Length: 236
Image (cartoon, rainbow, N blue to C red; front, side, top):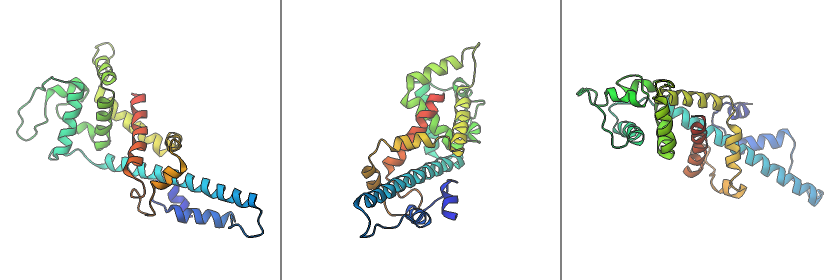
């Protein structure tokens, strides 16, 4: 029961233990010498399909945990990586345009210019409180992978007749995406992405480790995260 409680609640679970539980509960026993070749083959296919499905569910948990970790990671004005990511957002949306500086020695990112890209105050870090670094990462993903689309939407957002705060809207979309993920409404997209890989390819990218997040190769996790990031862009 604990295994399957974890499967559906974005918590770590061991695929091998879950598979064994299913085999025992559903009496999917090993083929005996009396079994026909057809029945034996059917069992093998069934177990392979169950295993593949469990790996898919576990991948959902890995990605959900990664997104949640980023959400809880607050923007830190003392963290140079955070500052650089924020500057990337500006340079992607406003290339070759210098921000006006308020010359605040205690807060180098303070500028009235942030309102030009839809932040709600001079200090953009305050807008990330709800979604943390995940909100910033997804804004940067959108602006870097689809720069012309992002800049076009930004221009529209600054139209006096159609105004909406671009950055704040993006952060709200991140919150909406997380809600969909937590309600299991993003599973289909994740599973469809997984199906683009062969079963052998997936199994080769999975180790025997039971630690959440370490059992998939980085490329598999990143590919799945980008499926959600692309959906974010689509909503925007």
